[in-house]
Amino acid sequence: MVSPKSLDDSPDDAALDRRTRLLAAAAVTLGGLSDVLTPLGALFAARGHQLYLVGGSVRDAVLGRLGTDLDFTTDARPEVVQEMMRGWADHLWDTGGLAFGTVSAAKDDQQLEITTFRSDDYDRVSRNPEVTFGDTLEGDLVRRDFTVNAMAVRIGAAGELEFVDPLDGIAALLAGVLDTPAAPQDSFHDDPLRMLRAARFVSQLGFELAPRVETAMTEMAEQIDRITAERVRTELDKLIGGENPIDGINVMCETGLAARVLPEVPAMKLEIDEHHQHKDVYWHSLTVLKQAIDLEDGDPDLVLRWAALLHDIGKPDTKRNEPAGGVSFHHHEVVGAKMVRKRMRALKYPKQFTEDVARLVFLHLRFHGYGKGQWTDSAVRRYVTDADELLPRLHKLVRADCTTRNKRRAAALRATYDELEERIARLREQEDLAKVRPDLDGNAIMELLGLPPGPEVGKAWSFLRELRLDRGPLSREEAESALLEWWKSKS
Image 1 (tube, one colour):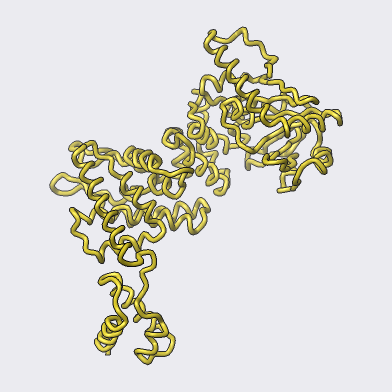
Image 2: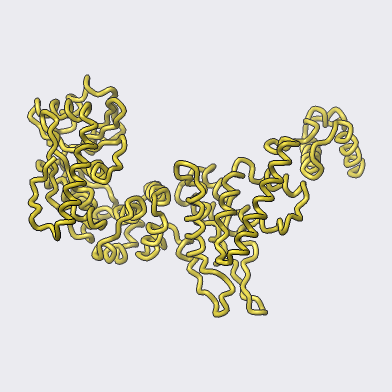
């Protein structure tokens, strides 16, 4: 894979060498896809059309992180692309992209999107362009969001690969900088979502913003209000699921984007009192997020990450300066859980996802009542029951929430939580903590008390469940005796 762009103006031999090595590595990566790229290139060439791998696919190939989604661009119109792909692709479908010039297909294990050259016009009110097909690759590349996403690889008739980089995206990639092909103000006016994508790429790629991009984002942050909640949510999830979410969140806060789409996070930047009676809640939360990520097993856990970031968002609203000079945040977990629900509903998160994050926020302080192990078995059962299927995540969140620099205190907290987990394990050996249910079911309750179906049966069931949590498993005789005594006391 050879770049037609001159490399003579490279700043030094080291950069030139790295550029050469990256392009060579990308060629090897793409060579591994020859079973798809070679016949596809031949298919387009036979009809007299150009075909380029483009955008994030090229960027990720250069970075050595190419997935199974491949993006292409071509001078062929979408109906022609669709015709050519029939009979070659394993599967062809229309997800609504055809109106925007995009044909979606699957071949072997690869998902392909092939889009006709575009030169769109934006109304700068919404982010919806008036789709206009273009005639040149250069015109298509210059309309893209960032130069690192404006590189292309021509796929020849025999599968040969040619790197094309008219906007010097490889230089930006080498420098780890996000810059726009055109003036950032024009780019962001066209599509304000690009500002949030910039923060997302900071998280995913570890890049920095070009100064002019950061300036434009700061000046234009309010333009993000033009974007639908669903699209904002998608970008936020990609950001928080990235390798460097703390950097991405910081970009959002520093440019003012967070104040528009996630205002509870920058609001945690509380002024620390002169006696340092509380930590910087914002940086504490980012540290908790980092430590929670370190405890993950496998893929990013978005529920855990969101809970870690938002676990203390109730503190600004509950902060109180105490008479003795201290600071308190009483019931911030209760307030925080309500705030989580409100924000996530506004961002159109699924109901279960929202409830899971809110419940973790609500429960994250519960452990601190454990003291030095004073909880009864009943309290341990309630901890497990209230967390339910979220218990493994709650374990990680509570451990991540320890950010003290006092090594002795940190070690004591870890040891105490180890002990709690051991107690939970011991109780699980003795009884089924996953399904704490009354020792009598509804039918047995109705038979014993002579009740018809109705609210009184539900009250009796709740009494027996509370009894089960307090005392553990009971024999049928013990449960019946306790129920009869409770029912008598109500008469």
